[in-house]
Length: 598
Image 1 (cartoon, rainbow, N blue to C red):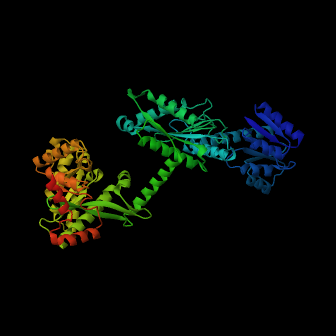
Image 2: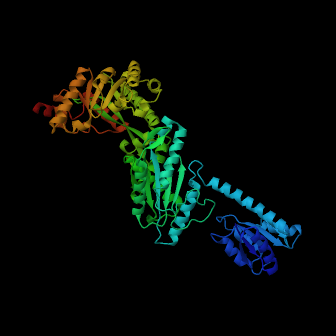
Image 3: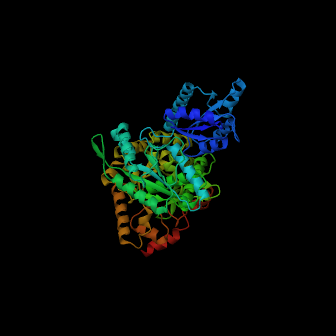
């Protein structure tokens, strides 16, 4: 082990050096405090030091203070050599940062004993540091160590414009399935094997891994770092690269290394990885910033199908920031009363009479105006907010329907259609929630129609049949929305107590010009009639579409040709103006003329 002797007294210095040489230490000798501080501050400097209290230039106390002021340097165990014996002097030495002291002339036995004690302390400290900076499962560096190395690279890049580095963020696709099916012990075994293959994927032989120094040694330029961030996530720091192609080559090599099956608990397990790459060339001020961008690119790779890599660019970062703000604003929207319900009338094609409405969610987002659901519903689904938003829409729509049926009596009474999302339908208390909301609003259950997509009904047919049966028992109407775009089985449809099929707008938009779409619409209408259901066409935007749909036997429709979705005040005005004509919309004459021409 290296040890430094700093003493301007030649005789004292030689006596101590002779003792240490016999013990097998690698002894370095200097004659003054400045040289001692320089030696101890170097990257490969000794971690044991004997410092004379009184030396030219910097004395021993000043050296101790200077070394202790460098917080990121490996710990140096320093022993002061002094003829001072007063308690005040000893306290001064410890306060300056010394770990021990010896009175001169040094007794060889005491000197060796105190040095052995210092070595034990350094070994214990190194062990604690290594455990704190090392992943216990894979023995790779952990997140703490990785961020420390990454921060050094960011600092180096600020000083050297020609210096580049890259981050690869590796996430194992489908790892949860292994844990759930084979158990956590098997999952740990798989992680260890993955780590071994990742080690062999990185560019250079001088990889900083666990056995490499995680005690605080400054990483040299050109060394790569592989770390486990936790769970099934790994990161790789590629140091001193030429360009992005270096990162791409490593990512491709990782994909190749992981392609071969793993043998876990006697079973072959195949896995893939999604990899995000961030390059320092775009300029970063902190380690967290570039790590965040690599993480963002990794999630982009997952969204595009997994088992691939993506390179982060400014546009990707902008999208991530926008998404984060959207999530934050969305979480606050309910408390801030920013959601709105707009209503689109559903009309009878024979006479354009309003028979009901569909409740459509909108978001009055500050700074963005009125936001359509296509821009935020997916995020609400992913963040788990959609069941709460859906209940709010249902409650608001039922309340409004009750008010309109009192203010604008009609025979039969108006109905309100409300969409139920997949996650909302999966809630175990859906039926009781609907019952409670109907009771709160004092709304006749026959005035409410719940709309589900084909894909939602097909996820668990037995449960779907049971829940729909319970809702039907309440008296609530049930509709299949966007019919024709999913994969529903006719045998399953017959099992469900449905009232309405809604023809998807994609078929309606082509009904005039496409014989295939017209045939599909005709088939849906015939199917609905044979099952005793009402048919509603969505997305009607022209008189010719409306006339053709009526000629094919479609009973009801909605779309911009009749009215765009409008807020409750606007719809109340429509109802007030059309009350005298039994709630017929002004498109009636245009529609009738078009029907006559068919």
